[in-house]
Amino acid sequence: MSSRRIRLDLAYDGTEFAGWQWQPRGRTVQAVVEEVLRRLAGGREARLRAASRTDAGVHARQQVADARVESRLDDRQLERAFSRLLPADVRPLRVRTVDDGFHAGRAVRHKTYRYRLDLSPYGDPLAGRYAWHVGPRLDRSLLRAALAELVGRRDFTGFADSRCRVIDRVRHLERADLDERGETAFLSFRADGFLTYMVRNMVGTAVAIARGRLASGAIGTILATGDRRLAAAAAPARGLHLWSVVYEGESEADGRGG
Amino acid sequence: MSSRRIRLDLAYDGTEFAGWQWQPRGRTVQAVVEEVLRRLAGGREARLRAASRTDAGVHARQQVADARVESRLDDRQLERAFSRLLPADVRPLRVRTVDDGFHAGRAVRHKTYRYRLDLSPYGDPLAGRYAWHVGPRLDRSLLRAALAELVGRRDFTGFADSRCRVIDRVRHLERADLDERGETAFLSFRADGFLTYMVRNMVGTAVAIARGRLASGAIGTILATGDRRLAAAAAPARGLHLWSVVYEGESEADGRGG
Image 1 (cartoon, rainbow over the protein chains, first blue to last red):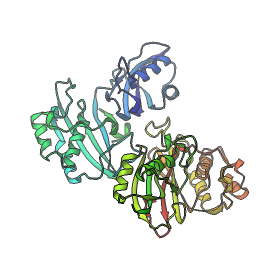
Image 2: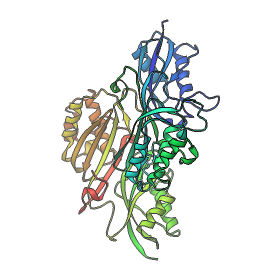
Image 3: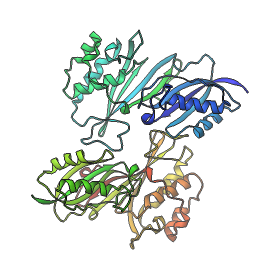
Image 4: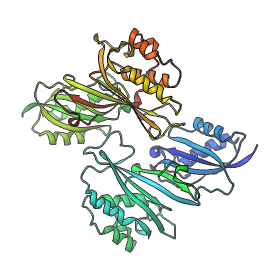
């Protein structure tokens, strides 16, 4: 049996999960994948490390995890075994053997989250699991201005949840884009890292501004003061997708693209 | 109370429905919407007629129905009432008062159905409710050729289900297009009408040809002989979407577009 470290790229529908991270109660992606790893490794304990500990209800188009495995299966065979043993709402994208120094949570060049808004008047029933229905009355120029104000290397304390225990809250938000297609708007955020609830808080606040429920200067004040009570409620989890993860030395094309 | 005929455009997620048409048992879209109509009309019997009696599990981006209603609410107020009273998986798109001669099932210029294929190696968990996972090994030129062979004014008996009781099985299939985006393929079919299971049987057969499991001449033979035993199994309902309905005298833009 050869022991090696693998990088496992995954996609999942977060609807039926209590998030990524293992919990004593509640179905989590980590627990479901580790259970499969244990079956593949003949019962040995397996420990997965992820690029992003997504919250309950958040989806992933590309999540990246790593683990040590002892298995005679090659990467392609492991891929197929994951496909066979994982449930329909978690799917492998790719398995590759990596250097033992690889850690999915470190050396991340940037991650992209995408948030989907449903702009239809009464809600698109085919988007209900994957979008936040906000209706058509959003001022697009206020929305674009709000997103533009967020971009930069900043202290994002005002957009972090109170549960966030990280001390250094400076992140480099490289992009915050709006892409509208028909009655759907996609808000994409690319950064070297994100704080707990940061994307959902930014989306909730940007949408409140675009609806005229919050002054357009709010973002500047929240960033300057770090006072999250000035921000709007977090946007719901179901619209949020971990979109892609790119590591140092990788190009966008190595992952699933931006 | 003024009595009038309304046209109700609807969208629905078909996953939890036993199809459009009322049944003694089983939750159907017609039954759910008629129940709301009865509430809006103070308990009077309401009868909906639809452009298409979609099967169990089939979705609709635009379905069109009509009914007589007695209500003091104007069209916009009815729209809002439908939005409030209908469940999350059936949503109104628009209500408009029409001439009493309007019949949603008649004077249809064309309907478009769109079928979604998931070409990813192990299945996209975010498309599971709305696509058929066929994997990446589809010969695109065989697929395009199979679709092209279907187009025309033809007797589609060989692609109808045995339950189909229509006598005239000649339909004009105006378009059968393939549109590939990333790991998703959309097959769109536009015709003046469709027979029971016709789209799912055409998709099942075109995919079998593109996978090399059925000879490329099969479509010609099925059309010529009308023998449905030569066709592949029907593609699953979950990938099928009633995409748009256009009536005589209407342009694409009056509906939701092609």
